Amino acid sequence: MAKAYTKQKENFPTWLMKKDILAIWDDHDYGKNDGGPKYKLKQEAQELFLTFWDIPSDDIRRLREGIYFDTMKELDDMKIHIIGLDTRYFRSELKGPKSNYIDNVDKDASVLGQAQWKWLANSLKKESDLIILLTSIQLLATEHRFEKWSNFSLERERLIGLIESSGKQVVVISGDRHRGGIYKYNDVYELTASSMNRPVKGIETDSLLIGETHYEENYGIISINTETSQIQLDLKDKNGGMLESVSIPFYSSE
Image (cartoon, rainbow, N blue to C red; front, top):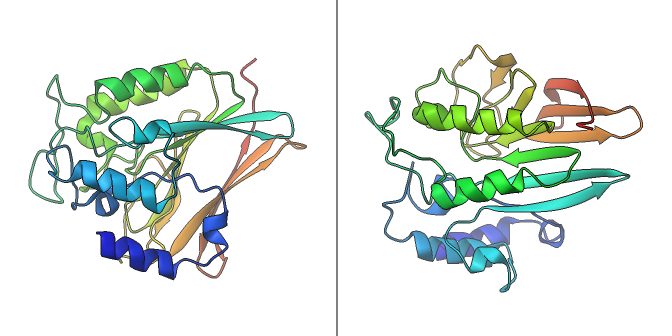
């Protein structure tokens, strides 16, 4: 993994690492495909990850287990709260055969772990106008057979309930799937952008999907227009062509 990180940094354009990058990990930068808490090198993986992304030595992620974080950004007079979740370090074991996972409804099963759940509940109470929630695995999609929050349906319900009870406008972004799409559940939208380099062909749909899923290389953009009070979610191909787009009216929680 150390060699892979070194090679990856050489692949990145120099301007990229000068930006304020807010990164969370998924399985392959965690160190094990579909990996969870039993991965023996997760502490070493965390150190490699934080070093690669130039996380300062006094950052809380250097002092605790897991790479979850939050930060506040300001756009005009709007406070944007960005929350990044760790869906690997503390997650319970998946049930069912590989890539055909079934629901784990054990009463003690967890995606985030007790400490991270408590931290998240407190984080959602912070004053903000919009929350952008980062989760490596999909939150809203339920109908595919791969990794997703729905493999722990009680945990998925818990997170959606926490989002809705916060009274805040929340946009979820996710990856992992080697395909992209936009999903909606009540007032919660999710933009899945994946992947930038390893597309997997095939047709996939979901009852919460807006439009189609797209397997070609893609990336996502969140645009916020404070003058028109609109939030736009775009899924684009590698040449900038539009694949899917949705415009969301911004509402104030006050």
